Length: 196
Image (cartoon, rainbow, N blue to C red; front, top):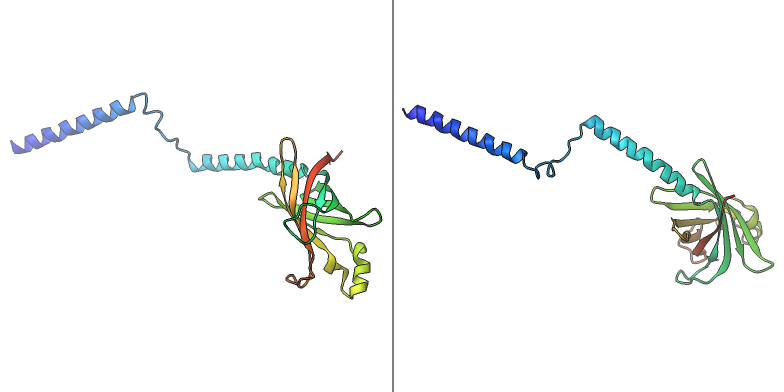
């Protein structure tokens, strides 16, 4: 008799739990709380699709750099915003950014340099000067190689709806980076025209 009672109790509890589960799954709110299940192949396919959709955006960001940028470049004090007139013309080809920088010291003194570099994943850009011709006089005066006077530019591409900006820093590339004679500064540029 005792065994019969335990069996009845077991089946009664089991049937009651099943009925409660069915009532929960049939409620209108149960479909809102379900978490979708993605098998591995489906998740991998979605990840690949997202990457393929984002790749053109990175290329478009690089292409958005192309054209003429104008503003000012400072030397020395990194808190200053007033300085020399500065132009930067950039082109992008096969992931390589090339350009020409022009610094107007005065009407008679203009520094023009070729630049080359790339954009990194965080949308920061690094360019460095590649033409020694502009610094031959300074190299002769100081008995240092012209490459000691090369500058590198590090900046962020701030793409805006109404106005895009390039703001960053420049510094001379020297074998003694902590020398007090090393020149450095900032620059602030706004797009003037896109590449035609």
